Image (cartoon, rainbow, N blue to C red; front, side, top):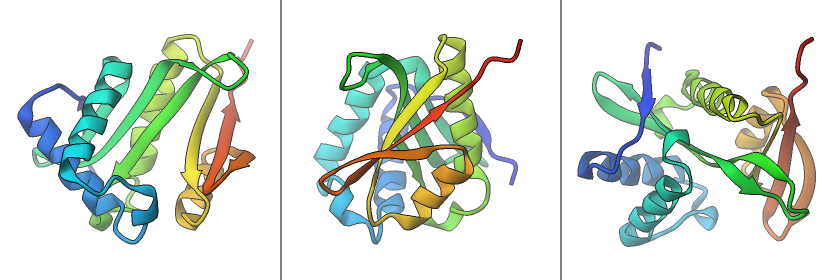
Length: 159
């Protein structure tokens, strides 16, 4: 699938596209999602504020089909700076078609460009497909907190 990746902006179109993709992505996984559109819009703006250069959209024929928001300014619970993936959302009909992998590659490349070798994310414990997807990308389960599983990936620099 030949989707293009670009940085997100604060346009009304990107915000509304995010709402649509987010709602589609979380069908069947509502226990992990914001329910109200107002909350989803607020979440979009929070993600954008965290690291506007690390927020990407995948488009096909000019239509948003997925988003990834990463954060090069994040600190974990031990106050260790690391690259964080806050959100990966793909429209249901595009899951399993390489869009998520392409977005994750964009996010990780961005985080590497900011000097990060360690990446982390949280995923819902019952989101088995996502857990398997992240494991294929090299993420490993590290911890569990309530209904969330912490996954991390360590990059090694080649010499």
